[in-house]
Each structure stands twice: as C-alpha cells, then as structure tokens.
Image 1 (cartoon, one colour):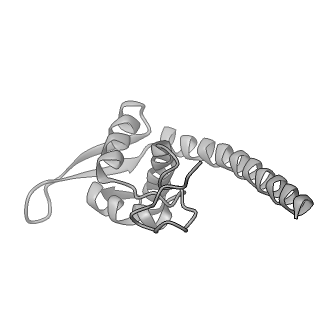
Image 2 (image 1 turned 90 degrees about the horizontal axis):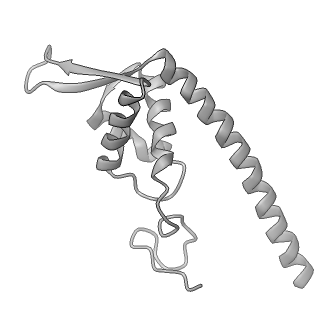
Length: 132
C-alpha cells in the first residue's frame, strides 16, 4: 500500500492522519479535559485537545462539539450558558458522576488497546529482525 502524503507531516512521517476516522478518540480526551478543568467552554476544550490527542490526526472543532452533544445525551456531561462574563453568552460544559465513571471505562479500554499495540509492534519488529 502506497503511503499517502500527509499535508501536516509530509510523505515520510509515519503518522495516523491518513489511517481512517479515529474520531471516537475525541471522547476520552474530552472527558479527561473536563475532569482536569472542572468545567470549560467548548473553545477552551478545542484549544487543549491537540496537546492531549491520542493520534497524530488533527482534532476538528466540529468533531469535539458533536462528541460533547453525544456525551450530554448519554448523561456524561452537563452544559449550560455562562452569562456572567461580558460579551455573548458561552456554553460551558462539566462532567457528571456518570461521565467520571465513563472516563474510567475509557482508561481501562485504552490500557487494553495500548498493550495490544505494544504486542503488535514487538511482533512486527521480530519478523523484521528474522528477515534482516
């Protein structure tokens, strides 16, 4: 399979940008940031997402907002309008108790995925060493 050129990293950087839609990984990062911040505006969450991303792919604001709406529908996040500060009202988000439990579920799932990935990389390296 030919490696596609990544507009962010160039041709030879082995990034996850062109490896398919990994948008579900927006959810655990959003939960983590809400846990760390207590409550936050969507814009602030969006600004912090890339520093906490689980892949090299750029996290788009639209994906974050879709994820926040779904988390709220599922009872993991509550939101409201902050009208105390000057300027237009801003949507503020906070984690619920159910959201904190869901964050722990994500930590367990990602721990399993991480271990599986380490095994996969070891196996690939072993096969490369056997050939070379």
